[in-house]
Amino acid sequence: MSPSYYFKELWRYIKSAKSSVFSSTVVIMIAVLLLGIYVTISINSIKLMKLIRDKVEIDAYLIDNFDETKASSLINSIKTIGGVKTVKYISKNEAAKIFAEDFGEDILEVFDYNPLPPSFKISLYDEYKTIDRIEKVKGELLKYKDINDISYAQKNLEILERNSNSLVFLNLSLLLIITFASIFLVSNTIKLMISAKKNTIELMKLIGASKETIRTPFILEGFFQGFAGSILAVIILQLFLNYFYTAYTNNDFNFSIIDTTFLILMVVFGTLLGTFGSVFSIRRFLRFY
Amino acid sequence: MITFNKVHFSYPKKEIFKDVNFKIDKGEFVFLIGESGTGKTTLLRMINMELVPRIGEVTVAEFNTNSIKKPEIPLLRRKIGFVFQDFKLLNDRNVFDNVALPLYLSGVKPAYIKKKVFNVLNEVGVFDSYRKMPEELSGGEQQRVSIARAIVNEPLVLIADEPTGNLDPFVSFEIIKLLLSINYKGTAVLVATHNYEIVKKLRSKRLMQIKDKKVFEVVLKD
Image (cartoon, rainbow over all chains, first blue to last red; front, side, top):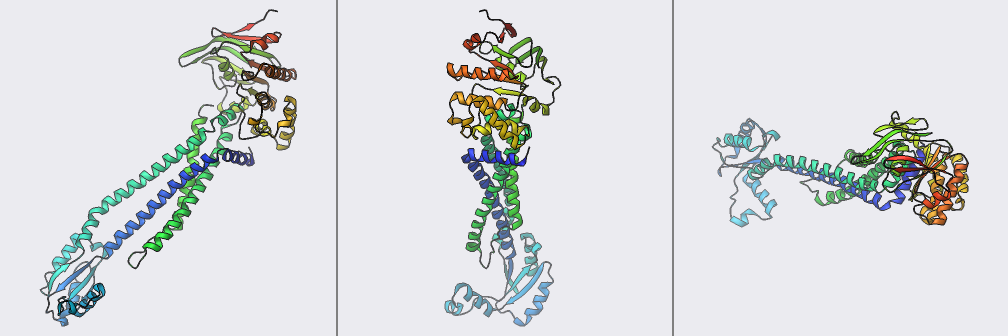
């Protein structure tokens, strides 16, 4: 059978069932779009979690009458503690400057004196940013008599540690649900569309069409619907992502947009969804010949 | 050309044929009658090998139900022309494309298809309507197009299942006349019908009746 015959038949099928072709293309678009949105949310939530973890630092507050000349020897000593990456001394004056930057007020005007203690800002290597390990570092730091108190974002870390496993589980579950829902939805829509052509299929069988001849235009239809649906999904997703990129990217958080490879994969996924949806749906009409 | 040899056939809860034997030769015109539900359509579907006997065998040309392979079934069906009570024309294409379909399926070259389809449309008397869509035609015209589609591939046998079932008496007779003229040119014709008026008018033609799960030859008296 010549390819021109298949394309002519395909065009006839599309022309005679415009609304069902449109609805199954839209269903494929929604399925691919859902997957794209899911991946974007997933990538950015993982990125946000990493950002929160990256920002974890230890503030070691020193006694009020700390002798600044001892600062550099103390820094060298703290650096020997396992997991410590950098140590920075913040004097009372620098602390007052940071306060002024954060709150827009001069601390001396609020209290008449500077109550802010000098401190060390200690950053850790990534693998040490867990509550267990930070507590160990904290224990080591408190052995220094010049260090008065220690603080770090313990609450944030606790939330992260408590939820990271369930977040991974939730992510995988959502991925499975979206994938299966997409396959189910698309295959049913295509099945309905092909059911509408039942009489054509029956007649084709009776006048001597081979299975291949009957099947091919439907598979081509599924292929083009999948392709068109997923291209539409990619365009809509790009528009959304551009909006979110402008709205949510700031100095602290750089909103990630999914890359070209993933967009191509989305088109491949949608096209396969349409094609195989048709392959499986037409099968049941050709079972008995 | 068509042989039923000791054919037994049953649906899951109903036996239809019990030891059916008959033969239809090249160029014959045969009426098949029988009450509703006796198995007229089932018998026609067995010729098309949509259904196969439980016991016995059906032979059509070189194809036999016991030895035919699935990929050969379309080849068999290209040798049989089928005409239906409800015409079964495809509404997504015009008259020309409906009639041309079996030729496309047989891989015939487009230049020949055009010539052949116009000839056949002329033969059945609907040449003027070749660009019309099926729903623009009367019942009689639709049946003529359906007959054109059935004969365009020059089948060995033309099978008509209640071809006049949806038509008024005058048009019915016109359709039967058309089938007779096709038969006159050498194609065997098997017509399953309820229309006893027509059968009586054409009493010289061979008549088979399905009764009590068997097929009998019947001779009408003058």
